[in-house]
Image (cartoon, rainbow, N blue to C red; front, top):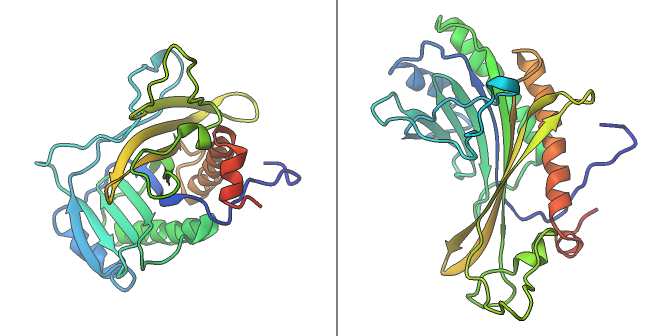
Length: 273
């Protein structure tokens, strides 16, 4: 990004969750290793949980690319070794570990830590990456070789006031109009949308993809719209430097896309700087 181009920034963004992560070539994690890795991170992530593992996913380009690229991560069979969760005391941060994946989540919690902004998230993820590399070396699990990097931002939009009607998409999304003319005055009950954009290098070659998913959700009896933006691609080098560079690139792309597809009125409500 040019030094003269300032990224969009909001004082009160509608964020509810952010994820930084890598997928790497599988290492020799057995059933005993998550407990041992817990000892490494327990001071900051004292709670433990587990989930079904995530299936591997890669962004393909050129003749080998297929159009069934998944918009959302799929779960593997529960019979496989589970994905370990290490959770902060306030439930706001989650470290996820499986044989080929390391993820760091921040999620909004009523009394949890506030979003540490991008630089804080990236630094924490860098520290976790280094901890995993040292752990894999000490336990002779094999090298941590990243083949995909991803970052996800999840936001929620709500209706004004106390109405139980869903929010007006046109208030938040610049490409949407609720006015369909006199032929179709019926108010919309729900909206779901999926879109995919290529992420290109300065030379125009594909580096990854950005996925946009808009879907209806319900919380505390209120209908909301949830917007998920995920940028994913291969690092230029399979190491921490390559991962950090792709995260910077992906963060820039997501912020610009989010700002481009949302309305000036919403930007004002979120106090764009």
